[in-house]
Image (tube, rainbow, N blue to C red; front, side):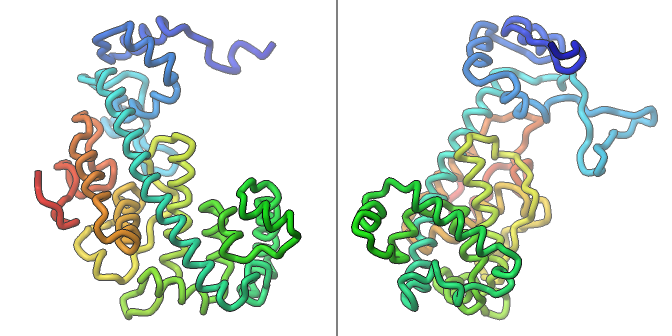
Length: 330
């Protein structure tokens, strides 16, 4: 048996409700709160109410910051007005936001891998096996080998009819078929492994340019990496609405991005990812209403004082910046 001090003690749902109340959270319906704790889990919900906890203050009255000096440390007690029902509403808002993100990510993943297969596969139907398409540095560093081993595994595990047919008939699997085994990460890494000329061609197809009008391969590489991270968080039901990314989004030189006010904070939040998703979605479906659905959802976000829209990277607390996306105001 581990020492008593090695972990926090187990508590019943009733005990957890009492703990939250002692720390200052308002719980209008305790029975409902117990159900929600049983359905979702205390720890999972704690990520949503964390910003509602009081900031720790030192003897001089200053906020105590974390070791990196980026964020204030918080105590256990809640700020006045923190309501359990509002936290549940925020949790449901985040769930709906993930569903909208996944809708866009699915379309982009399928489109980009189709473009890659078409633009590289036309030179060699088995280009995904051919190192002549690969940046030599990626071969030397072992990145290409890692990708290839992963690709063999994906083909071996695939239950897609098109893959099974080729394996059954001992027929080479062409590029435009093998991409059906790809996930977003495999697609992103393949683009990263390619030689510059092929990366440029793909950027041109997706209209990703720098300020001089040249293909901006660094931007597209960054987008695919960050969108893959977002996709994984959505797929594993992680909180995304106010999550800070490790890497900032790279802004291309396209005129589309002018006026979004994507500062350093915004480029690490969901706002910049929404901008990228919408940029790419418009290449696939020019008449899509996806951005309006996102705007409507953001504007319906639960109104919690300590959880403003600026936590999503938006320029102010007034909701979705509809004017920047040429949307009619509410």
